[in-house]
Length: 327
Image (cartoon, rainbow, N blue to C red):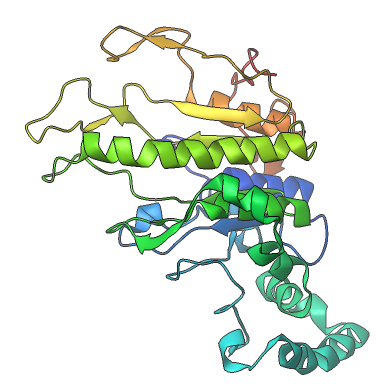
């Protein structure tokens, strides 16, 4: 959300970035929810649960397409107790709901069905989202650039499903406005002392996948329309601990941004030589959010929504502006 935990929350809590975009910009079509997640259910809940809609409501909570299985597919999606796994194939599913859709629309029943059920119905009765998830329809040469995925879950973290970067691009092309995902496990500083070996193992894979995604966006003419952000919540301790690793260090951190029509190819901000604290152009978390909102066409200084208590709420705190170096 970009808000401090100590900050007073509105009734229902603060919405996540994708929820703001879902509320303010809505759907592009009825088959794909505007706010989608590719978030695996993992041992550490904070790494596997997409942030919710806050005071904007459950209808703007990310529609998560994944669970405890490594590969994304419509399997396991449930509508009124009926799941795809209970049906032999997609054609049977279509037949099962075809009559219901026509009857419900004619009687106005859909108006009383909750938004999540409507989204699920759209997913289960159209092919647009299912096709976006189906990587067999992707050009094999493009898919190969992303690298090889690993379906094994990384302890209490997500698997290295690098192909989900490509799935995210396909979801955006299908109509999603915001896609969030978790990838691998980055908490390396414990008793196993795996900080340095894991860095050497993980970063080349991440670099290949992100490079393929950014290249993909440019080749498809989407680089001005689609923003990419890779972000964690803190940096690493300048001093190595007794386990030959680095611990959590909230004093400084970093983020990578691409696309969105931003002026990329630059490093913004600088720490001292030991990476202990910022010494030049410190960037606030909300500045990154403000920049992403700007790229999405939202004016952070003017857009406001009233919460359940009738209090106007803004995308970011007063005085926060998009990063002028980028937009």
